[in-house]
Image (cartoon, rainbow, N blue to C red; front, side):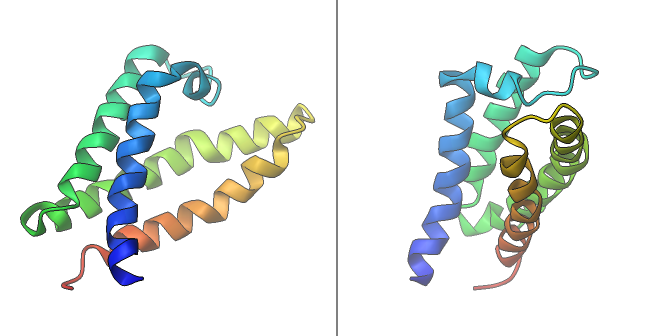
Length: 120
């Protein structure tokens, strides 16, 4: 199970990064209106997720990759997830429940990345 979880995290980030290129409109809907250059930022964040996922695999780059993932998740939490939840609440969006569920998920993902900063 431990080995599975070790390979699952890089796979999640690599697949999520690739999905930025397959379906950028999905991410465009999540972007706050006050952030400019949506499409370039979607592609840049896709590349970042792919790179960080790949860099989790070698032991020599695992720790820095995990810390960068933590930083990325914290930034996304405050810039995207919290504002999106507030907007969904204010607009009575039927997907509010998804936005609410994503908030604690971010803490889990941060904890999981933190585990990659430790020696195995």
